[in-house]
Length: 507
Image (cartoon, rainbow, N blue to C red; front, side, top):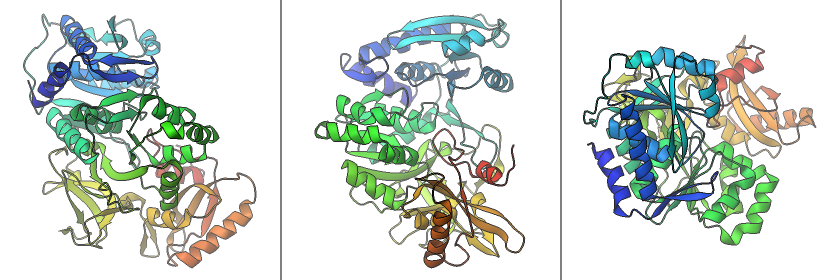
């Protein structure tokens, strides 16, 4: 057994009758004994169907408590699990299967009904729910028994897609060693313990839900509440009803909570029952006014961090009680530096360049090789940033998002942070658009709080504010109003798609 598998089994054996996981959809808690029995039952079903070590598993499920024993069962056998969105259309699922040859799948009943007749199917009834299993007989042809070899620390545990905000997503293979190391760093830096009640409303097909929340909760031996999905109107009732003290969010969720009338009414009604210590926020920088507004209104802390799929979630987090608003905090279990344009790697403050990282929770290659992403042991993140004199990281955007205006470099995130204080802005993204004279123009794309009303006045106010509060080359010269932004699964703005949308290009 690996260190990860030993830990997961021992955790459940320590106190079998302890309630560990609550599935909000089912409105019930599951004990350690039930979770272990589910993991054993599912592992046995796979072995009976000739599935074992080094086989590949595709999962398309909504958030469910069944993920807890599912993960444990797969990893105990040495399987590599690839979670995908439950909304994945059958054509895309089959295309992924054809490209990467998954020996078995666990899918929603709707997807199971659409699978070709060539797939063998069965169901496994667990305490946490009934799972629909499918198998590819062609890949299992000639087998007489499952490979029950002992897993290795470096066997792939999770296959995840990168967010793909600037290009085609890459496939990231995260070993058992990597995700266990990441979860331990996450649990410690997020002050998670047996007294913590954590809640997941982020999708479990994403690295944040899988490692930052679920696996870290297991490492910390805390209780875990699983919501089917994020609901602003239900969020505060879920926190109050279940004694939630910690959760992980993205900035989009924070801004929705601030704007949602039902969410604000629920908080006012249940405030005395809410004891949310803090929320961990990641994916992209939260504007300072939004962060302070959330903390003041909801009497909690927002702890911003920085991470990515390639690092099995976080690389940095703001230390509890010593946060610097606007920063992504300090490295945790990670060596972090800035790589300058000439290839020099530095930790000197004030040097703007590409963020590079290495550590025991960071990949050394992708499943399909991309050697240009690694230099001298460093992973090149593609993100632009700088360190301050105290070692806090400030993320300035993607290197590919940098706007080149007349030879000057403009970091969109820096411009957004300045402009976001304007009261009519609900959401803001700054992008570069073609300019015959300067190469690129700085364009502010705005979702207004009063859509369709006073846009000319709002445009004039934004342009004037930019001219008076930004360097001349940074100030927007164009303002476009839209109803919403194209986003990925975690709410991150897809800037290339937004740029195409603004320019009238349809992929």
